[in-house]
Amino acid sequence: LGGHPLIGIGAYAMGISYQFDHRNRFCITVPEGVRYLEGNAFDSCCNATMLVLPSTLQQIGEGFLNVFAEVSFPNGSAYFSCENGFLLDLRSNTLLYAAPSSHDYPLPSAARLGNHCLDNWLADRTDVILPPTLTSIGAVFYDLPELKQVTLPDSVITLDSHCFFATGLNSIQLPPGITEIPAYCFAGCDLTSIEIPEGVTRIGEYAFQYNWNLTTDVILPKSVQFVGYGAFPEEARVVAASGTTHFETPEEYALRCP
Image 1 (cartoon, rainbow, N blue to C red):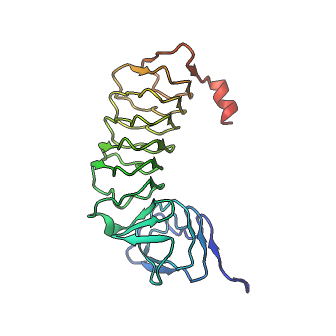
Image 2 (image 1 turned 90 degrees about the vertical axis):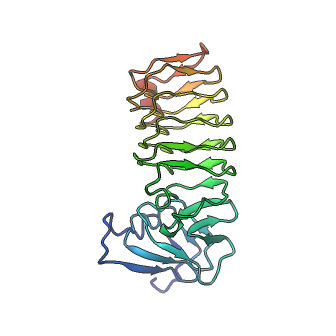
Image 3 (image 1 turned 90 degrees about the horizontal axis):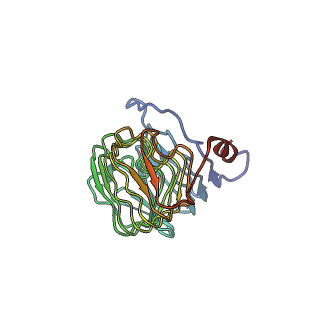
């Protein structure tokens, strides 16, 4: 580019259209020499059928929203694998992307599910059991109203914000090692009850908001120190076992998140 070698592709650089058009399909070949793809580099590149990636890639950021392409490394890769349609970072054991061809295969062993990595694999699924190797989950189960049940292994210790945002979950059993339920994590679901395990110290803003079917009391264990603004629906009765649990006020939230 301009006489200089291309070494990276930035966030949202390849986004073309949010609307799939079967008449306008194409393949993208990223040339050898490119070393990194920033997160969401191919966001909304929904008409690509194939992403051909170079052996020189050292970093691929999370985020493949509205991407329906297959992925290949024709010259191999020292840092990534792509078997059965699953793009995996071998160093961090992070699942970065699941191509459409992955749909009929079981999830691979991974330590982390990256943001939006399962959009293609989750199509038409209502019940998911996650592998026992997981310790961290990004914004993976996002806006999936047909998804009713997700079984989390006890090994999970970290959930990202918006992890289960606007899914059809009607129940969830949180792993015992969870210490934080981040912002918007279960907002907009169909939960009828919520059980917060002992060990959780922080609940982010709007974490369980918009669960209109919540009919039982929410008991916060003694370990909960902070509850973000709007964490629960106004109709829900929230009872804190500890008198020191702090419920964030609108004024405090406005200062923290202006």
